[in-house]
Length: 330
Image 1 (cartoon, rainbow, N blue to C red):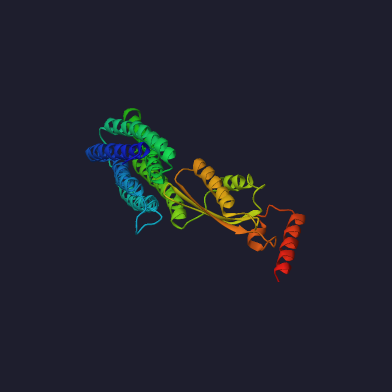
Image 2: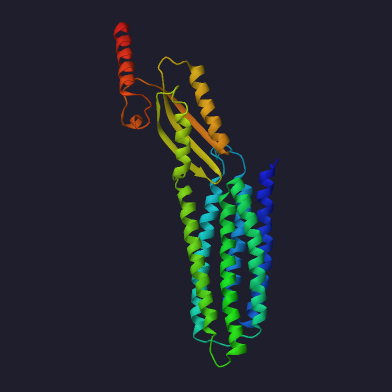
């Protein structure tokens, strides 16, 4: 059964598919009618956004599936895979736009009915502002990289549509007030500017997606919070070490080792791990926390020294106690 948050994710992803489908059709029709390479390039950009939104819709549906026999860590990484695919598609589209713009800049044919072009760019900007805000809102609520990537696509489309619109307005004004001045090259320049912005968005997206695919650590501020949470139990722990974190889609995975008194019983040590895990999961929902319990003998090796919570005096005291106990057993 779908949760409310999952339903929100799927609804907003579907909204993105519908809005992009409409914008692709309108931009392509107007661009072909007035022979504007910048509007046609925007249609291609929106086509890439449409493909990205379809991939995002598929990924948010698939990533929410529970772990199964063949995917014991769940399906979260499908969102990172979709983000990488989207970025590669954007790179390809940007290359095609630049090629077409340079072809067009040599011809510099007059454009007619520029008012239609200005109108469709205005409609595109307003539509994408609304849809991208919804995607950002739900994406942040659900920690979905797929929805946030889709939102960035549309936000980029807002800026590029505005840039193309300004170029068309300048050409329109040139036709009306400066009929002898050739401003048609602005159409190709606007298209190239669109492509460069697309490349920047694709680069940022692929860096973020690839980091999670390669199991990069959680952001420093999140690891710092986890460190602070463990320190709250310093009165019951001797230390911790081997903290490892990673992310798959909107799922986080955290594991580390804690050092406790050798005489602590299983019930007490388990209680500590349950409390720490619960607090982390409250702060970061959809998190799997694994905590390994180890007895502390006071001999800090290189692994655990950085997370040791004991003073030098306390470590020596534990070591002496263990040495005395060992000698008695002998």
